[in-house]
Length: 490
Image (cartoon, rainbow, N blue to C red; front, top):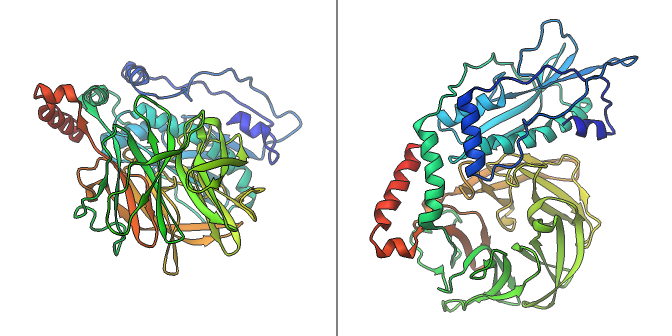
C-alpha cells in the first residue's frame, strides 16, 4: 500500500511511523502454517518487510492512514483513514476468524475517514470466507485491501460528505484455539481431491419463462462421454442457426481450449464439440458477438495477462487474433456489450495477489478494436457475491440484466442476475433481481456461467463423482456421505 501511495500522482507521503507487529499466538501460527502447506494460499501480505521511518520535516501531513492494530491515540486530531471489518474496529484476522466460527460466507471491509465533520465510509468491499481455509480467504482479502486504501486516499477530495457511518467499538476477541472444524477442513480438502472427480458439464434446454426456474425437470445434459470437461457456455445465434461455444480441456491436458457445436431446433442432440481455437496458453469463457457485420470472440486469456480480440475468418471454426485490446492486466471472463451507441467490456480484475472474483472493472470504446478506456469509478463493483461476469449480458424486455458469479462460499456458489440501472462513463449502478443456485440443478455442487439466445439457454454445473477405483471396491457411497457430513459440520 505504501508503494502504491508513493507512485500516486494525487498524494505525497511525507511521514512514516512504525508501531511494531502484533504478536500471534502459537495456535494461530500453527493454523496458518498448516493451511499454507495444504492450500494454494499465495504470498503472505503480513510478512515482515523493511520500511524506513521518516519524519514530516518542513511538510505537515493533512491525512493520517492508520494501519496499526492498536487503538488510535486520543491526541491524534488530524483527519484519519483506517480500515474496519463488519462495522467493528478490529484486526482483519479477528474478523475472518469470527466469520468462520459464525459460519458466515463474507466479511465486509470499509475504509473509513474520521474528521471533524464526522465519520464517512470512503470505500467498501465484501470478501469471501471460504469453507476450506481461513488463511487463504484472509490473504486474498488483504491484498485487495491494499488497493482499496490507495483508491480511498485518492478519491477523498470528491467524497460525498453526506454518506456517514457510526463507528463501532472494538469487537470481543475471537477465539484463536484450534478446533475440530479446522482439522476437519484440512482433512476434507485432500480427501475430496483423492476420492472424487469434479467434472463440469453443460445443461441445455429450450428457453423457459425464467432462467432460474425449471432446471430440475429438464434432462438434456450435453455430456458426450469423451472424458472431457465442458464449461463456460456461450450461445450465439446467426442466420437462424444456434451455435454453442464453450471451454473444454482435452483428456490428459491441463490447458483449456475453445470448442463449438450446433444446437438443433428439431431436438436432436448436439454432436460432440469440435475444437476451434487452441493456442499455447489456457483459454476459456468464449464471449462471441457480432459487430459491423463481422463476428468476434474475446476468450479469457488471463494466463498471458491481456485481453485479446479474435475475428472469425471462416465462422465458426477458423479464428485469428485481431488485436490486443488491453495489455498487462489480470482480467478474467471479459464480456462485450453494446449500449446506446457505445461499446463496453465487463471484466473481473484481480488486485495484485488478490482474487479474480472480487471486483468488476468496466472499459468503454467506440470500436471493438479500441482504444479502450478504463471507467472513472473502477472497480464499479467490489463484492464477491456478484462482481465476476457469468455470461453474456441479457435484455429482459426493457431491462438490462448482467449474469454474475457469486463466489462467496465457494467457486460457483450461485449465478446472480443483476439489473443494470446506470451505465455511463462516469457512473454505474446495479442490483440483484434473481439467483440460480446449484440446488436448482440436478445433483449440482456449483454453477457459474449462463447463456441464452432466442430459443435455447444453457448453464454449466459441477458434480461430484467417485473415482473408478473406489466404485469397484464399494467405498464410493460411504466416502461421499462422510465428506458431505464433515463439510456440513465445518
